[in-house]
Image 1 (cartoon, rainbow, N blue to C red):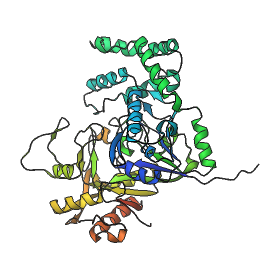
Image 2 (tube, rainbow, N blue to C red):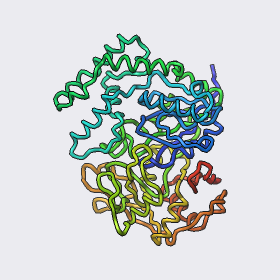
Image 3 (cartoon, one colour):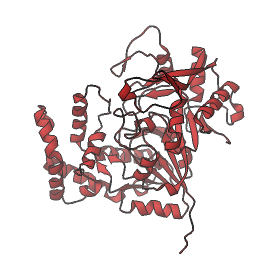
Image 4 (cartoon, rainbow, N blue to C red):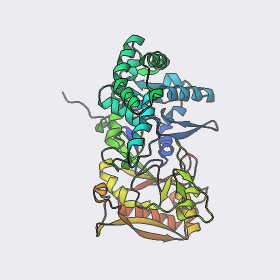
Length: 454
């Protein structure tokens, strides 16, 4: 039998560098008219802010598309769920007046659960390392570790009788408690009976939102031509396979990993939008070729008389982590990373946020720089090197300079309203990366995006 091929209908939003790029902004734009919005990877280590009826709320697990009353929102199998945080988010959304949250929110039973002992393990593992990654201590990595050792607890397991759940938790915590005891951490050793009673109650609270056929949900959406939006978490250089290992997150957060976590196949994709900022930033440790000097020590801003370039960018761009409030490391725009990411992400379009901010920063600094190639191991290269950890060398950025900066009027609504210098900056990004810039963020609100014909 011949079967008609349905057109891909899913828009995938992916971070292009190290996260915190403003993915929620472009996701919100497409979610307005979406039927289904999906979160596919990560956990409460990611965060984005939504605005509903003038009120702001930071969401860490629930897709931001929940604010639009026509959407069904799915937390997919690639997400690890802290049920306490999830229940708090549901309550906060209901108190804000978001309609039918529990009716429209679906959670796959395959999603693994974050327990308190995972958070304690997170801190312990960091303490063992010579060069700590700088995790959020939300227990994400240890939860994925239990998943990989087949001792993890899923939402399905929380719904079993307490006695059966207790036995599963006993198996999961045995090696962890031995590790806690060996490191004089008896005070955080897990009690399977107490956890089983508590987390079974969480499971019952979440039971009404359990989606028992998540694959069918997305398959039907595909066949019926419904509009699907996938909110990516983290970003390209934080993917545990292709990123700056070991300074990465614990999930596969590039396009293919996000699709798997969201219960989608490649056939269901309409377009992939890669989101970046007009400058760069990074939280935590790891290589950062264009990083600029700033007054930061131990994840804190230290007092200073005269700001460095990094301080000027950080403060003007409000570069503090949404989840941790840690000051971010900042630098000029690295186009080489995006050129490297293009094919593995399957990028169709770029969204560049903070185009207004970098223009004003350029006016203060006198110019804006862009990295368009590297010098690495004595050679000129045009890709992000894969062997940085082996060589111990961070590639040296080669910059092009755009003098004077620019101001983008708050009334700008089309590409024609953008100053010529800003257009030159955008054009150069397209030339180096090979990805067309279709969406341009020019302000803090979700509506402050110019869509360009490309």
